[in-house]
Amino acid sequence: HFGSSHLGWDCCDNPFALYTSLGQIWTSAMAPIIDPKLGFMFESNYKPVIDLTDIEDEFVRQLVCALPLLIVGILSLFFVCYLRFSLRGKKVGKDIGKPKLDYLAAKVKTGSKAFLREEYKYLTVYVLVWAIICLALFTAKPMAKDSSSKATDGVRSAFCLIIGAFMSGLSGYIGMTVATDGNVRTTVACAAGSLNDGLKVAFQAGAAMGFGVVGLAALGLSFLLIVMKPNRTQGQAIQYTHSFGFGASSIALFARVAGGIYTKAADVGADLVGKVEAGIDE
Image (tube, rainbow, N blue to C red; front, side, top):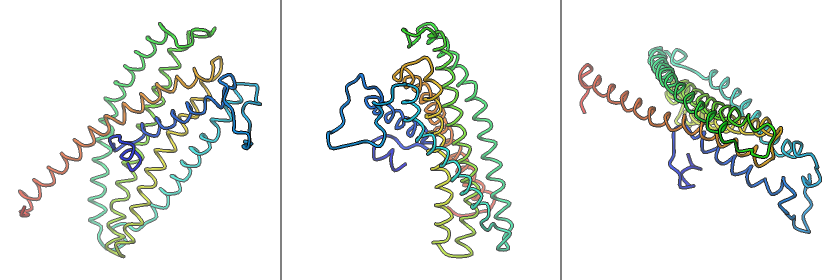
C-alpha cells in the first residue's frame, strides 16, 4: 500500500499486480545488460561480480538474471509459512476465558471463505474466456515472427495469463485467511496484555500477507521468464509476461471491487442488527 500510494497509483486490497508490474520493469531494465548487441557499457572503474556479456548462451544469461528473483520468491513463501505457524500459536478467546470471541471469529472466517469461493467461481470463467481470446489472437498473429515454433505463441500467452490469475487469486486467499486468523488473536493480545502486544500480532499477520504477495509475484514472474525462453529471444520471453500481469491485474481489480462491496454489506448488516435486534443507539 505504501509503495503504490507513493508511486501515484491507486491502492488496492490485493497489490499483486503492482509487484508484477515492478518485476516487469526490472526485467526490462535488465535487457540492456543481458543482450550485448545493444551496446551496454559498464563504467571503466566498475567491475561486476558476474559479467553477463561474457556469457554466450542466451538461456544461461536469462537464467542468471531470473534465478535471484526466483530464490527471493521461494524464501518469501517459506517466511510466510513460518509467520502463519507462529500466528496460529498465539492465544485465542478460550485461552483467556472468552470462548465467544472464537465463535464470532469462526463465523467471520466462514463468511469470508464463502465469499471467496463464490467470487472465484465467476472469476474462473472470466479468466478462461480471456485465456481463449489470447490463445486465438496470438496464434493468428504471433509475436515471434522470426521463430520456427511461432505457432505456440497463443499457448504461451494463455498459459502466462492463467498463471498470473492463479497467483493473484492465491495471494488473496492467503490474505483473507491470515486476516481472519489475526483479528481474534490481536483482540486477545490487547485484552490480555497491552496495546503493544496487539500491535505485534497485527504486524505479524500483515507481514504474512505482504510477503505472500511479493513471494508469489516473484516466483511466478521468474518461473515464466525461464520457461518462456526456449526457442525465443530474451526480449520475446519478457513480452509473454505481459499476459501474466494482465491475469494478475484482472483478479486484483475484481478482488478490490467485490471485496469493498462485501465488507460494506457486512458493515451495514452488523449496523442494522445492532440497532434493531440489540437496541444499540447510533
